[in-house]
Structures are given as C-alpha cells and as structure tokens.
Amino acid sequence: MNIKKYLPLLCCPDCLGQLSLSSPNALSCLKCRRPFSIIKGIPVLLPKRLEQEQLLALDVWGKEYRELLEKKDFECWDKYCSADVALIKETSVFNKEKDIFLELGCGKARNCAALLKKGYKNVIGADICLDACILASEICEHYRLTDYFFLVADIYKPPLKRNTIDLIFAGGSIEHFRDTLGGLRKTYDILRTDGKLVATVPYVSVSTLLQGFLTGNVPRLPILGSFYEFFHTKIMKNKNLMYGFEYSFTWRELRTSLKKIGFIVHCYGLYDVEYDLKFIPCLLKRIFLKIIRFKLFWPMIYFCAAKSERKK
Image (cartoon, rainbow, N blue to C red; front, side, top):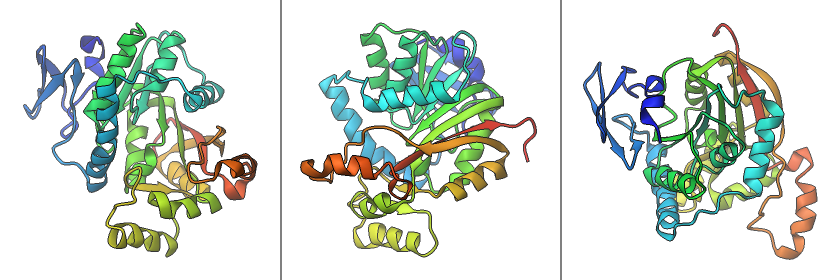
C-alpha cells in the first residue's frame, strides 16, 4: 500500500489536523501532536473515544475476522459482492483512473478487491476492525492487486478531509450506529460536490420485524422500536445481537434524513440478491425467496444520493 499517495487525503479524526509521516510505522497530527500507529502498512486512525455501539461492533466482528485471518480465508467474490458491484455500476458514473472510491465498513473488502480487479486505480477501504483491514490487505496481495489503501477508522469521525471522495459505498454499515443523522452527515462532508453515496440497509418490513427478534435488529419505529431495544438490551443482555447493534429503517425516514443534510436522492429499491435465509427450513426457502420480492417483505434496500452544491 502506498501511504504517501493517500496521505494528503488523511486528517486527525479528533481535531481534523493534517497528518504527517513521522516514521515508517507512525503518523502524527501536526495540530494536536497525537501519534497514530501504522500496523502492517495500515494506519490506525481511531478517535480517542468510541461510542458504545462501536465497541460492540468491535467485539462481534473482531472475533469473526480474527478467525478468518488465522485460517487465511481469502475467498472474497460471492453473490453479495456481485450484487454490490452491479449496484455501484448501475447507480454511479465513475472515472476509474481519477476518481476516488471509499468503502465504509469494508470488512475483508470484497468489493474493493472486485473493483481493483476491474481496473479501478484509487480504492480505499475503511473499517473499525484492524484484523478486517489486515485480512483485506492480504487478500489483495494474494490476488496480486495494486492501488488499494486500507485504514482503521470510525464512521462517526472518519479521518478523511472534507471534499475528497468521489464515491462512497456503505454496504450494511450505516445501520450499526445510533446517531444515523450524524453518521450520514460525516459521509456528506467527505464527499466532493456531486459525489455519490450508495448504501444498503435493513428495511422495516414483515421480514425484518420477525427476524429482528432472533438477530437483534431494532426497527426505527415509535414505541415498537423502544420495545425491541428493551428486549434485546435489558432482557436478552445483548446476547442475541448477531451483527452488533443494528437498526432497520423506513424509506420515508431515510429520505427525510438525507434531504435534511443536503443530499439529492436519486433512487432506492430492493437490494436484489439471493438471500441466505438462515432461519428458514431448506424446503421453504424457494417460496420465501419469491415472497421477499414483495415490498411488504423486503429484507434490505439500496439507495443512491448525491452531494448537492450547497449544504442546507
């Protein structure tokens, strides 16, 4: 990874000061003087304080990525990756040579790897889990991919300067922080004018309301949302939070939040992929795959929104 190439885009997650390369294994903020480690070529640029849901995500996902890293599991191209890349190409006009792509909550960066394989030249992956970024880097090395850059970061305080990114893809990451509006506002800040945010999120439907009891999802609905959260946190003591803290949204709420920040909403719809349906008996899966194509049962949606010229 070429840290010097991407260094001009980076900033301190706390004071937003310029970062400098103080040694091959360290960065420092020129404003607040805070040092940051570089581990296996990956800058660890987390803020001093993480929110509770971020700590929970670290606990849940950290275990999974540590196991994958130990196993050297480099499988990364699957049906979800194909669906994500198709969605990115369908909703965005992107210059492979010049534009900068950022995947928020990249995990093992299957989408980054897929885009690199297609010839994209400026690909950044950000995740709160260091092991995920190390795994992503090793995957890219395994497939002899270049022009990638991974960093450990918090979506609430991304260590990227304002107006630097052309396209952000957030696949299943926005739902994992309580302050949805605050998180979306940060993506707005780092996008360039006319830059796009493409994201997938759980959708409030019959499917997610039923599955939410098993996986820990909390619907963003009055009263019902409070009940689900009480059940998961107080009664179950977070034991069933399979994916960490997670919301599901109505499109009306998401659209209102995006417009309030200043985004121009382009489109939304069913996130079209052959879902695993882990909790459905095998004999019934084919039937359920047809049922979930009806809006009342949509598990997830995608949306595409662009940064307008002037923030509201």
